[in-house]
Image (cartoon, rainbow, N blue to C red; front, side, top):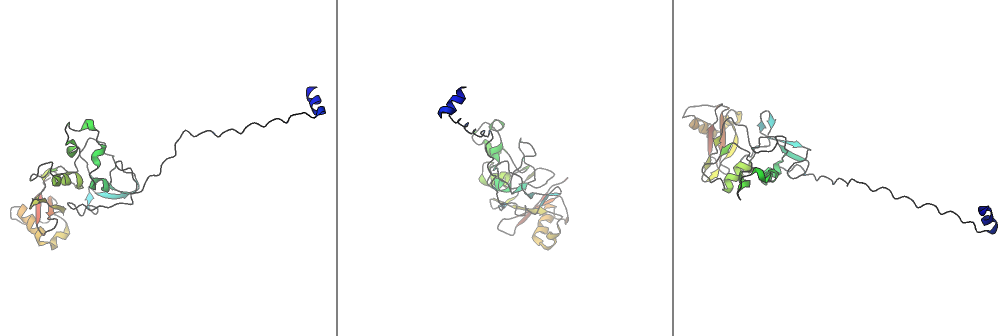
Length: 220
């Protein structure tokens, strides 16, 4: 009756449409894009052939679209060698982070020695020492923490010349040494003056900016 009277008197009100509902706000933040490293390939002066070298049937470095656990970037040269630290073996690290000595950022402080120089011993890429240098010397740190590792059977002392570490060039059974008299001479000297080529238990090193070769025996 009231609605009829309102229509008769012309005072009927048009119902107000309900306000549109606001879309529910997302509880998930947008995932930020992962920056590409562009397969950065730094040069390691104490292991110049590391990108072509193998590690127990696998390359020391391999191109990967995975994300480095240190810098968080993808499209990297992934390191496949051993890292001597307390973190899991499946930790992914890239060549650029090794070159820039950033791996220690992953090691929790409670797993480091309680002193201001702890990060120098937080990890190593080699089972080796450089006896000519104090362990805090930048050259010793560069060998231990900024030079990719290679397979060995036993710990060894990294050879030096003129106060500078030599560069690792490969093993004593590689055919290329046939044409390098200095390398053959170094192998012979390491074997007490007797010819030993080819021998897989020899590690060949060379001056970074010179012709000198040295060989280290690494027996199984």
